[in-house]
Length: 128
Image (cartoon, rainbow, N blue to C red; front, side, top):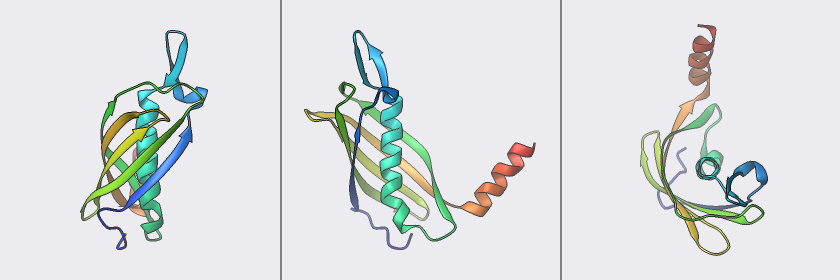
């Protein structure tokens, strides 16, 4: 995590598959829940190579604006920028584009966790 710096960027592309769509009239289009997942995943990909062994990350806040439809079969692109680091809290701005226009924007926070502690807490919750 010591190698993370504000201003770091990553671009991730993905094809909109049927599983990522919702029906709008006669068209299947990229759904908002899948845009959220795409943004979280892209931010996570930027962070992952910078984590120490035994560290993981979780999303904590997502504010998204879905600005336009993207038909199934087209590609979407997330442009991620790390905009803030506050100890283990990481903040991102993400812009989402298709082949024609910007279709979304997102502010997202992630938190770096120690996997052993996280999994112990989860196990305790599962066991009741």
